[in-house]
Image (cartoon, rainbow, N blue to C red; front, side, top):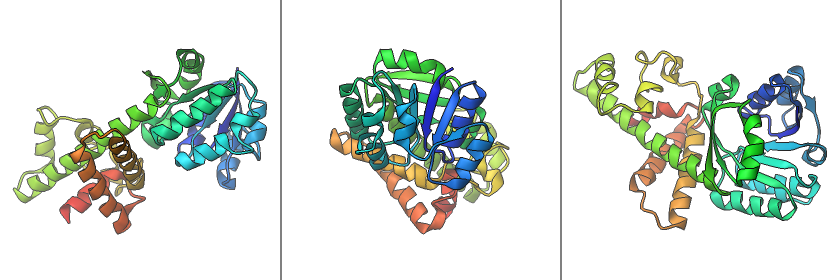
Length: 294
């Protein structure tokens, strides 16, 4: 059993922390939201007011935070994790952030004798609750081997992508594919509607043909063909349009930093920005089909 400090008990972090408690670990949690802290305590966790306090007595520190600036502040600030964790502590950042920030934090942690991984996730709130997340992990082999059994309590697929920052690289590349493919699937269904082709008929054909993809078969943007998709719940979010836009922007920033040509990724960012700015930021990203319909 490990003593784990979990920083960030939001929509993703809370169910992840609860799965660690269920897995037999002693978990101390930190969050600014009293309602999240109360749910964490009810599940058997121990609330702690400050990240530095939890980090100072943890074997493992896990963070799930909104953006790179928050990760830098929590890890590198004067009262941050890097300054207060004991040498040899394993640090795992599960936030989705820019590659540069991930590598900067990892370098600072290594300099203090800490083990650091960037380990963003895929699978949404449903995967976090079910413990079936995919972890894309960047960092040393030593850190990955030590972290694997911890990550297995929260996820089903754990992949060591390479050195520091490669977990974040894998996440933003994956989600650029997802954002582009969801727009493509949505455009196809809207075109089918205008041509008089039934939703189910298109699904039956495309899901077994060369148009098959995850956005089609697991997260279909029209009601009916995939009963578990958000389209059947008025696009109640599993993964919001705002979060998709964030990841697409991270991908574009990364592409510019290495002079990579990602024209479809840029188009997807533009389309999701228009959709989110139109008041749909907190709906599921598959609701982009509404924007496609105009």
